[in-house]
Image (cartoon, rainbow, N blue to C red):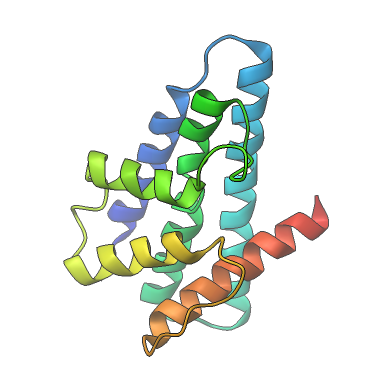
Length: 155
């Protein structure tokens, strides 16, 4: 079971991680802040959806984590390439998976949950949903995609 202390750890980790990308350069900092705001809005959206469909606490916590980390690769992407365009740089989901692997941020979670979260992040920006028999994976992926899309509509 994911505890509130785990969620607080991930929230704090995210905040500390993104702070390192603030440079004092107004153009860069503005772009970084834009992606932080996007991420936090997606977290709010996914939690609103989770509450609307009465998800159990564990699935709700997993949904929050995938929303918080879905674009974690965007920060390195922007610093390295000066763009958020995957076509002009590289796949931000892949960059994010590298960040997750390198930092070990999910090491406090059981292996299955780590793999589940990584799989959702890896597939969140694909054109279509992958075929899978893992219903939890598909649910989290659909929730994330809906939260991202819903956020895009209202901003």
